[in-house]
Image 1 (cartoon, rainbow over the protein chains, first blue to last red):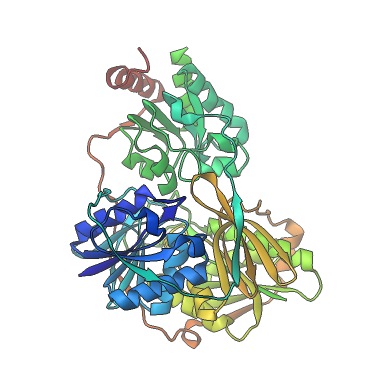
Image 2 (cartoon, chains in turn cyan, purple):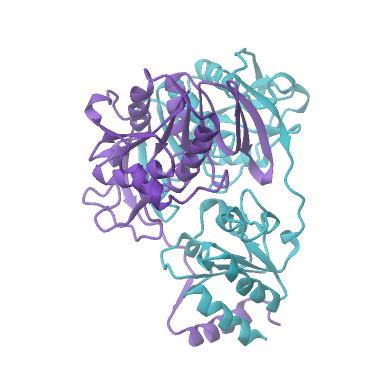
Length: 302
Length: 258
């Protein structure tokens, strides 16, 4: 069995998350080859075949061009699986590759079982096992689900080149907003999730954060709704934190949120919904109404 | 220009999900249904573009599923879509993303749509494949996870959400498909007059058999709850007691109260 791994290269370095692709392939028991849009002068340690497209030409993501690069490597390598990370790059590119090859795609794989690939569903509350029925398959794996493997060795480089129309053009990056709050340094973070109900209830959560000498965090829906500033957002598109104590108040626990806080030393979740996925990572799940429980906890602390 | 927005009706995510008789999807019997949250942003963006372009623009909303999905379609009409297509499929949940995309592109292929809007993924299935696959099948340009959108004279300028708060700005030539992320806009609530007006709008029904010619490429073998992480304590009961229990645990297991 052979897997073609699609690495992600940014600013002259293979992203650490790309090593999770190797961890996944190892668990799958597959031989690997890797494709990278990178540079000759900065080859990553890796013992297999490395399909390399020159970053100075293919560096910024152009979906049509990158699709053709992957298809060219697929033709040369004839892999059973083409594996991406489930990232803004992977979820954008993988379905294009799968559709071009007319093969199955399984998205956001979190584990393997003898009946297929395990994936999350229903906002991460449930799981499905999915089996490709085509001879090849495209997979995206959830970042953090598989242990990264640091390979050694020198790759055998095969250069790729292709050309495509410029129907989609990359204009530039917009940097992340300046962080007014550095949650990465906080010992205690108390996070407001959608379960707080409305903007007017946010101070209830902030008061608990203050009583514990911590910072206020927020989940994505709360930031999108304008209840709390983006600089407080925890998760993939916000900050990744590991405080001594993390208290999630009315946070359901979307995968993107869990990715940003699951390494916290101790996690308390307060939620009415006993089945909320936040319970999966919580050391303590308090099944209660946030607006009753949090003020009671705060007043006891004061 | 003709515009299309594709929506899915999904259960309220606060629901308790139980496997169905086949054990490969949830039992939909007792669930409350609503429009997939990502799709609300797609509808809002499509309606905003419809309003900006004005006369000569037609916005169609499409949904695949059993008759209950007409409720979600009516909401999209009340938000400002001009007309609707209901692709009637009582067993839509057993179709894989490749088939769902094929149904949409088979409907759309001879309709001359300029821009198609979808959510970035559904909240229940969450494959994030259908939009991109439709674009591939139709030969449309495509970008995903947009949090900013502008259209001018055949070109879309979209802001993609990348990791760590960074955004990528891309330009696409139409015909194009964009998949919408939360936070793209503020989806409107349908007003009562618009709900009344929507009742007069056309909802065309097409049986799925007229459009689906593709076999699935994946099979679901199981639907189940996640394995519980060991060691997690669940506290239930009266609030005052819970507070004392939690404080006891925090004093014991963490250093933050010392």
